[in-house]
Amino acid sequence: MEYYSTEKKAPKVDLRTAVTEGLAPDRGLYMPERIVPLPEWFFKEMESFTFREIAFEVAKCFFGEDIPEADLQEIVFDTLSFDAPLVHVRDSIYSLELFHGPTLAFKDVGARFMARLLGYFLAKQNGRVNVLVATSGDTGSAVANGFFNVPGIHVYVLYPKGKVSEIQEKQFTTLGHNITALEIDGTFDDCQRLVKSAFMDDELKKQLTLTSANSINVARFLPQAFYYFNAWARLPEKDKKVVFSVPSGNFGNLTAGLFAKRMGLPVHRFIAANNRNDVVFEYLKTGEFKPRPSVATIANAMDVGDPSNFARILDLYNHDVDAIRADISGTRYTDEDIRETLGRIYQETGYLLDPHGTTGYQALEDNLQPDEAGIFLETAHPAKFTETVEGVIGKGNVPMPERLENFLRNERVIDSLSASFETFKAYLLEHAE
Image 1 (tube, helix red, strand yellow):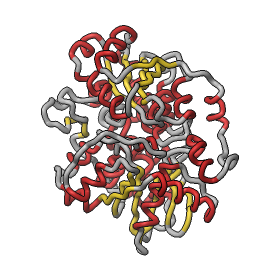
Image 2 (spheres, rainbow, N blue to C red; image 1 turned 90 degrees about the vertical axis):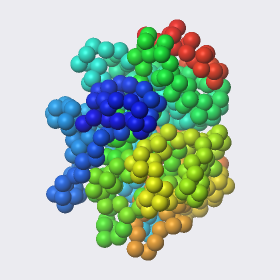
Image 3 (cartoon, helix red, strand yellow; image 1 turned 180 degrees about the vertical axis):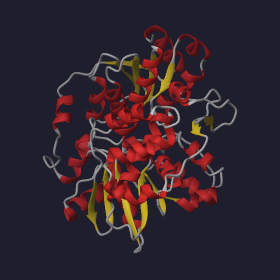
């Protein structure tokens, strides 16, 4: 399998190069040259498979030509040391709980897979890589913990000062060793800009081996297709049309779902659930994509004003807005909407949402048709946003998993930088290997 750039101005590369470089030389995002459909027998037998077994069959379609089957199985099975259960909430609405991994967020799947795949390649060539990752919250913790103490890899996590929750911050600022936390005086978009600029800087590329662990990396976003298949396998209402509602920030999660559909997963349609950062919602209405600075909300992991993975969606549909609209609709919710729905659903059903999953749930409640069954992605444990959630349902009502309590006991170790690329570049040249 070769990988091409969404900008179409760079040569195709193999999987190892796509993963270790992260971003193409023309600033485009790598895409697999083809999407391999899964065989009919797989869909007939999928209900009897475990999550790991489902993921392995999906992984073979992307990575099976480049990694020996036994090695790929080991990577997949080691990645998925946890489940992603489908939980009935009410009527024909189900929650795909993606918070059962080590950092209690959906990004554990992609981050752990990428860490193991990159470690596999490095072990073959005795190399060393500096991983740069911008985070608006959960990416940083998932990547930091996924790559923690992986030989040959040093991770630099860039996050916007004062714009992530305390628990999220503790999960990537307290590890030390091969994890460095960089507090940037700016927004998530500034952090993402710094990472992308680093990949394009000739001096940095000559002196350092850099890659990204954001969903711009194919090894981060493609494995997210695994849990779409797992959700469908667990759905009791397969006689209905299946709708996935995806809380959307950088759009890697939704892109993975679109890949799953192209691989044969019988998805009727997708809903992109946005907070006030709604540039894709506006695109679906107007046909014009107009990035703008992000604004802070209580669903902070979705606070993205220029979503990188939208370039992959445009490429997948040949920039045909009508074709995109046929598969994807959009919704937009304010902080007030999110608080109201989170509290109401907890009171009415006892099911506790996090702010991001709330947007996905609300989109289904507002748009699901009688002949449809809806699955929303519950992307993080509500305890990661205790202050916000308890502000809605009352103090003491959010269970705190022991894993999160352990992070909170530790002290932060951070370096603070401005949002200037020259400052960031100088820092890397001084500290990276």
